[in-house]
Image (cartoon, rainbow, N blue to C red; front, side):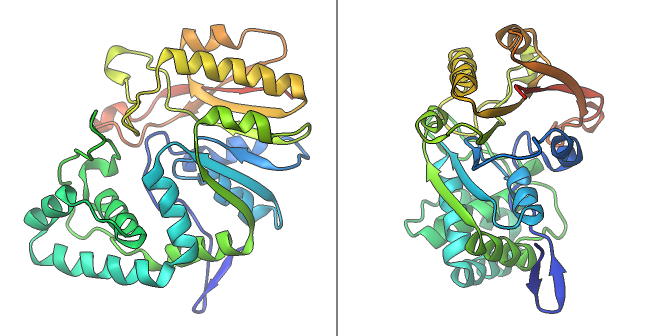
Length: 286
């Protein structure tokens, strides 16, 4: 289902650049989806590439999406419910940025708006103008990425935001802010749960788990593996993406898990030469 916007048919796609975003892997993920399933759950929502693919290709698909990052969850809800006000706010950011990009960027980065529209507008503005489009917060939960080197960033991106708003309004999508383990009480036999957590580092320099101010630790990975086994026992269909690391392989070595290695690029590595030639794991129980 493509969304009508003016006279152009626009397919909704992720409105934020997010660490580990899955846009480039959609064809592979699509091949690995089960033929049929009930509700689709995604507890590490991030940029939502697979969600938007699912809503576009499967009209009427029931979805339950969630994330622990409250600003991100608020953005999905604001885009769905208050798109006109959000676009007005983004246009204001764009005008001010064009006058003096550096001082304006750092003033917005320092700001702490209260309203849903201004919070979402700030997140999208920073995501479009910060270095490498990298969302990262420090231990106090403060966004701390420097200004990026862009000549003309697409700050408003109105066509896509309206397409996202339309498809979220038209679909059966529940959006929540919560820890990933909460999915266990909601998912039923035959439902599909897709996990795309912050990845386990494969090297000391590859550690990127700070998209909320609570790092995704090895203990969290253990919790996730136990949750996947519990969902499997319930008869749920489980699909998991993670790094090609020994820790992950070991935790999913039981015979109920099929583990395959797929090629993936890293769009946010600061060294462009290190963005290609990576492999990651795709793990499923069906």
